[in-house]
Image (cartoon, rainbow over all chains, first blue to last red; front, top):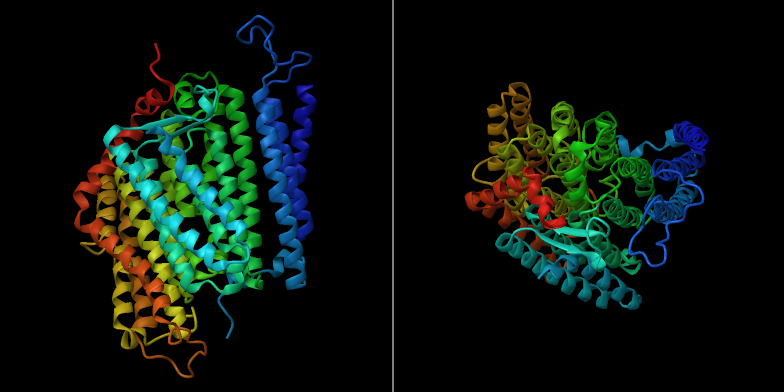
Length: 119
Length: 502
């Protein structure tokens, strides 16, 4: 399972990096989203994968004993997903607005802020 | 007493929420902004005083014991950063009252400013790596919206670059935090500081530390990762540029200092060599980029980069003197750099343009503004007795002590080139006659007395602070030395958070 997830994460990172190198804004957004997913899965995987052992404290015991699933990576991912969702929604609106205002989706055309003002 | 730690985070949040109830009344929002910024400054001052007198303060949020809950921790560095950012927050609110147009004010400018302050304060005060990520996101999303508020074509273009690079660095941060958790089983900074030297996989730890260096390097605009900054910082209204220039990159520098003194202290040898090379190139590329610019704010943006180089240089030297110098440098730079942006806004209001070639004659018409520009400009270039002289002096002294002659030489040269840039601004905007035909759009003459007061009070206050930091250098620097000693002694950070360990 770990190996499979490692392959998936690797593919997600590769695809994400390939996409953010494109000139088309939409592909860049997809790339950023894939990179965020890859990071989430990475946290999930490095937090040790366990099967069928929930992180419950057994009755009558004050603490977790023996093997248990670590709930923290899942909490981290949940937080990261929520934040990522908000930020990505904002980015999509920003990119759409940019496309409407500038009339282009080619990132190479957006150079005015890097150039000295024209006479 | 320790509950004071959460106030710099809660307070901006509450005032932002309150302001949303007064959506239609910009006047009420303004009053709430001013009041809450004053109170925040008072609280930050109280926090600083408490940390100076009682030592490090910690608060376990929700009563969950560290390392299981989220810890807020304020050592001297955090407290000083919160105080400096509260001062910048207050002056920016005042300056915004005079400069931000009605439309932007109506679209939640003031609440966003408060949320930005919340994110910045949270990043300074948290003692947990993942919580730091969350505060970075709070800060970033507020800054995204502030950057595009108004939606002019240049703003959108600048924002695309800013947003993309920051999302990328956030996902690197997230991955690094995840791997670190997988290795150490904790994300509490104090607990990490305790555990990391004994982890079996030290090679992987070095990789993680480099990932953190990249993500904070992007935020701080360190050498190969700075190009987004001069592409975006000159696009929003000048009040927004000023608070970004003063605070956002410094949060990145703060995180670098926190991670590479407290958490990865034992990695220091390898990381410091990388940081040393990066700092030299940061200083050089920033100042050389600035030399070619003729847009007031773009020129200042490039100078942010070169000044970041000095701070990283201090961190890379990693001696008590150098770290203390870097801390003093951060405070000096927050004050002086924000002030220069404020002055650029005043000059734009008088001449109608940020283009230095088309501006001119400000000194002849308004000699006081010329003087107000010279204080932060000469401080930035490092002319005694202003704060920048001492900041550079300490770092360069530490550089010579460490025997890093090449990089120290570059630091000296960059100081000279900074003076060149500042004199270029002086010659073009202040000294030379106003070129004909004049640019239309002098908005200064029509300003009422009240707005002019709001326009100038931030500049005067920050100029005064710059002078005072220079004149009372010794007590301030003693404070910086104490803070540096705290940073280099990781046990001093671990014990207050985790309690005594057998």
